[in-house]
Image (cartoon, rainbow, N blue to C red):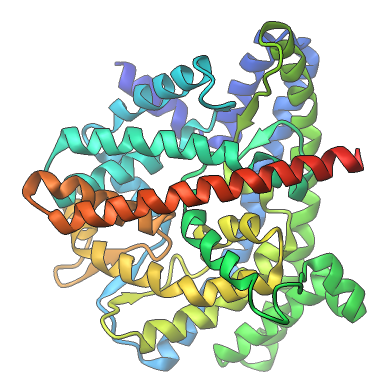
Length: 454
């Protein structure tokens, strides 16, 4: 009965569920009902508005990507269906409901002991932890191992939210918000590569974001102009006719122009809640800061994110063709949000570096998607949520945090004698220690810059 109630609430979607939760939080922190309701409803409008623009852009770009694939004659046996079928598989897992108390309890314990300052209200993305657990079961056959790894993921997500909060604020200017989304953990791989770029002459001091690009190239740096140009290029790759090429250009221009407009609604919605939460917590926990953890779309107003994502589409398709051993046919996840969101944070909106990092790390996404394809296909058939043809494999090019999921699945397989898996797990943990120190310094620098500019 309880499971059915929770599933019903989650089926409402983030545009309804999160505002309802925000009203409750607002009343707890002593906001007036009118103000709490207005802020929460604006948040729902922001999520739904961003979802509409995303759907519009994906609907425009995906057919062009499919046409490009068809033109190249790619013969790859693992079809990338994007995140939606994976979410369906995750929600259908018989033990999915257990992940909710795991996330809530871990978050409250860490808050209580001062191990995190992030209250993650993004219950919809519990499915990310469920998917990790499902993949661990697929590799190890162990339910306890799957639940343990899901709990470990919750801890790392919260710690990463703490490690990036000030940097996220510098990008968005939305106060009191953090990013505990699982895709943020791919930054553990991106950060050391980005650091290496600091030592390359001519590149280390080159910081190109949308604003600086606009200063250098004038009108061509405008969001809608950049969108139009990139849309035209994608259409040319797809061999569209003249009319369809111009249409895709205008569609891409529309999306890039609307993203910042919708993103402003997040600030309008969250600023009053953030202020009230700050005052509430200061009285009860002097000297501590608390942040509300949300899903990634509050970052979606950054044009660098979308320019990099669209520019990388032909790169992803090209690498799918030339990489030996790749079996993934990019399609549903061709706009790789799971890369561009952490890349935006790690590079501080440096568009050139985001593209460079994308070129370097695209093989990781393709190879992990290929590796997990048999497991995902078997699980998809077992739960029966989607109809998979007999000789077809399914996968997801994004996989949110491909390295984390592969490493911890292999590491958990130590119960079956996988010594190599334990080795890669130790290596990842060592890399995270470096990442933790590196990002902590960046957080301090960001805080100092914010204090200076206040």
